[in-house]
Image (cartoon, rainbow, N blue to C red; front, top):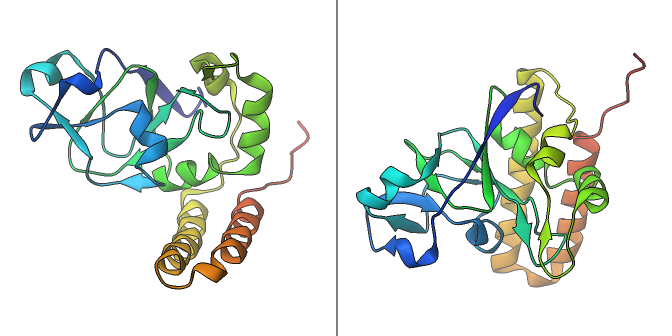
Length: 194
C-alpha cells in the first residue's frame, strides 16, 4: 500500500469532543458501528477549535479503524466521499491514494484481507493492526476503468442486500453469501511471477 499512497495517523479526537454541529468528524468506533463502504456525511461533528488540532482525511481517502475488540472489525474502513476534509480520531488512519476509493474499500472487505489481518494483529482484549502491517499489505490493482466496472457491479449487489434487509429478511443470508462470493471473485487476481 505504501507504493500507491500515504498514511496519516489520527490524533486526540474523543467522543467527549462531539458537538451537535460544526466540522465533520469520524471516530474510529463509528467506522464499524455506523459506516458502510463509503460515506458522504458524518454522524458526528466537532467545534472549529477542536478541528484545528485534529488530523484530517480528504475526500477520496480511506479511513481505517486500527483497533477493535474483535478481529473482524479491526481495520474496517470507510471511503470518505463527502465534500471537504473530515477530522479523524486516534486509533484510526487516513489513506490518501490515486485509486478508486470504493474499489479499495470493497477490497478491504474481502476474505483475502481478512486472512491477512488474522496473521498480523496483536492483542487479546484489544485487537490492533499496526499501521506498518497495513502499509505492507499488497492489494491487486487493475486499471482505474476496471476498478470502476467492479465498483459498479458491487454497488448493485450492495444495494440489493440493503433493499432485502428492509423488505425480505428471509433472503438476506443467501444474498449476503452471494454478494461475498462475487465480491471475492471480482477482487481476486492471479499472482504474477516476477
